[in-house]
Length: 332
Ligand code: NDP
Image (cartoon, rainbow, N blue to C red; front, top):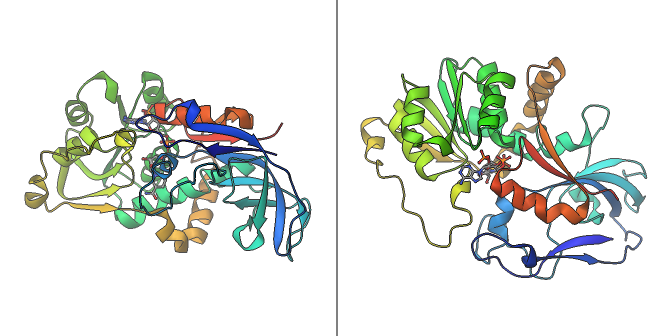
C-alpha cells in the first residue's frame, strides 16, 4: 500500500520535497479493526497548519509517518462486529491506499443515498462547517445580507447557497478568478460576486453591497476581514472560519486596522470549530440532503485522480485550483 508521509516541515509554501510517497505492507486487521481500501480522500486547508510543529486544536503531523485526514472507502477485511466486507465507511485515515482503522473510528455510509465523495464535502466536514458557521455561530436570519469569502470553495459555496435558500436579502461572494465569479452568479445564484484579485476588496465589496452586510463568513482573513468590518451594519455578525490568506506566511500578520468600528456598530466576531457542532449532524444531513435531492443546492467537486497526485492536489487547493470540494481519488 502506498501512503504519503511528511518528511520535512514546510517553511512558507510547502514544496514537493517536504513529502514522500512510501510503500508499506498491508496486514490482516487485528481484533476490533477493519481494513479499508480508500476510494477517495480529502485534502483540506487545515492540514497546512498540521505541518507546523505547533500546539493547536489538532496535533501536528509526525515526520516520517503517514499523514491523515478524512477518507471514504470499502471494507475489504473485517475483524470487528457490525462491519462486513463490502461496507462503505467514512474514517480519518486518508492519504493512503489501504487503511487499518479501529472500528469505533469508522462510520458506515450509504453510497445509494449520495456519491461517496459527498461524505467528505457537502454532506461531510466542510458541509457541517458551513451549516454550523452560518446558522449557529452567525445566527443567520431571514432578510440578512450575507457576504462570504472563499465563495467558490467547499465551505463558501455551501454557505452562500444555504443563505439564499433560507431567505437572505442578498448574497455576495468573493473568489480568485473571473471564471469562479461567473460560476457563483450564474450557477449558484449569488446576487453578486467579485474577483478579489481585480482590485481592493473594500471597494469591490462596497459596490456589491451598497446597503451593507449583516453577516460575514470569513474563510480568508486579511483585507477581506478588514473590508467586511467596514461594510457590516449595526449588530452585524462575523463567523471567523478560516484565514487561508495567511496559512503560508512566515511572520505574524497585522490585524484589521478598523477594529474600533466593532464598538460603534456593536459587531460580534466569533470563531467556529466544526468539531464542536457534531450535535447538529442529524439536522444537517436531513436538511442539506433534502436540498440536494430537490436540486436546490448544487455542489461541485474537483477530483484529482491517483494517490501519487495527492500532494499536488493539496498544493493546488492552497493555490485555488479547485472549484468546490477538492478530492483525491485513491484507486489504482
Ligand atoms: P476551499 O475549497 O475553499 O479551498 C481553498 C480556497 O481558498 C482555494 O480554492 C482558493 O480559492 C482560496 N484561497 C487560497 N489562497 C487565498 C488567498 N490568499 N486569498 C483568498 N482566497 C484564497 O477550502 P475549504 O472549503 O475546505 O475551506 C475554506 C476555509 O474554511 C479555509 O480557510 C479552511 O481553513 C476553513 N475551515 C475551517 C473549519 C473550522 O472548523 N473552522 C473547517 C473546515 C474549513 P480562490 O481561487 O478563490 O483564491
